[in-house]
Length: 111
Length: 114
Image (tube, rainbow over all chains, first blue to last red; front, top):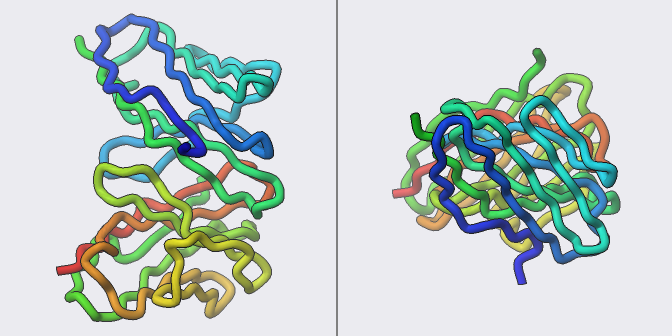
């Protein structure tokens, strides 16, 4: 079983739509959780960290359910510029900050 | 904004040749990493480096790979004898702490082995 699994995608949505990405992780020792964004052939960039209490940054809301080992990302009022691949990422404290990436979910926002 | 820089942006090499990929992490960061991404696949951890030694490495990071911090700024990844399957994008990253805080990635080096 993959350590981090994401929705297969791609997601094709119109501008203004709300889109949700799901992610599960298998290692209960995972202690830090993130959503990264990756544009085509570019480096991953941190979108937001994910906390147990849930957190919001503008149009983006992230949720973590430790009991279910489940992470989500909600994008409201999607923009053309949101088109990218969204990476679910986990880290373990006792592994020196090593990040474990999901395979990513591609989002394409159309006019 | 401080950034991680990598050189070269693209390297083409013949199979069996040695390559060195270079990175300059953010200056006050203490933890350094190499990741790779084969085209169409996920980003994979290769190695982490702290206090001038490897702190963790993956199964991918075999004897053909080595890392070095030769001075106070550069962090290098050497592949001794490249194989076709080493063709990938290699990303360097750095963090202030090694506890899963935000990692800053360089723009990557695209390695093509022919």
